[in-house]
Amino acid sequence: MNTIAGTTYRFSGHQTFALRIAWIPKAIREISLGRDPLTNFDEGIVLLGLGKNMVEALRCWIETFQIAIRENDGWEMSEVGDLVFNPNSGLDPYLEDHSSNWLLHWLISTNSKSPFFAWECLFNRWPTSEFSASTVVDAFRKESDRYPKPASPVTLKQHWEVFLHSYRPPKSNKGEDHLDSALSVLGLIQEAGERQNIEGKWEILYAFDNGPKTAIPQQLFSYFIHSWWNVTFPEEQTVMLRDLVAGSQSPGRILRMTESEILHRVADLVRFQPTVFQTTESANLRQLRRLRRTNGHEDLRAAYEKPRFL
Image (tube, rainbow, N blue to C red; front, side, top):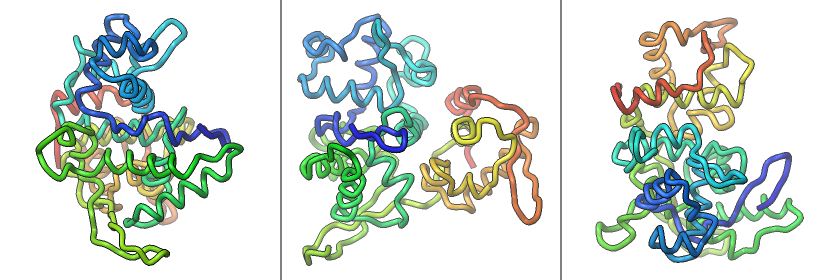
């Protein structure tokens, strides 16, 4: 882990394993029973049926996806983790609803306590829609070199590979790759041909999918707005719509939504939630006004129970 400007970025801890879909229910079940398989690795091997490195990886992912929190006397579910993944009362304890995939993407991409740098770099900072392994790893290196103990080239490469494996769809429906990441079904990253790097070697070119995110219910989009607003502008009643589109860790950036889709969705929210949202325009600056502050959990629940799609 490395610290700069008050933020701690991680390049390792995942033990080169992407989070697998089946791991979350296993871990949450044990946590809900008051057990601690993520700290006591020997117990975790038995209770979770995973190898030691996988248990270590699962602990890392549970924290990074903000599903549960390690306290002095054990693990506790986060508010969102409990609301959605609680095995007894959760909205989607087995990750069967597509909204959970988008929620997990949001939670890891906006983690400010101990974030992985790959998510910060690619979803919040990357200036173009295309990238390759060499350009990304070089960006990792430049960031890492700013710290007292830079990560090794092997660690940076592995960090990139785990990130890519988390989002790239499996090449077939066979084998363990098909059971891997809950994020790969989002289709956010796609292969876009090949190009030569600075060494003259051909490598795969990747691109973000900036197309319409029709699978995201409006209530879930509303939750994302509240989540972002409460962290970025906690004391403000109004925000610029351009910040919602392109501001730091905004829905536009994290979800890879175009300005037109953001504006279309906001206009719809204003119509359906007039006691919560209003739009205003001053000096040709369009703003979104929030009439009351909320954690958005009511919207999050509605996204599962009564989803409304555009």
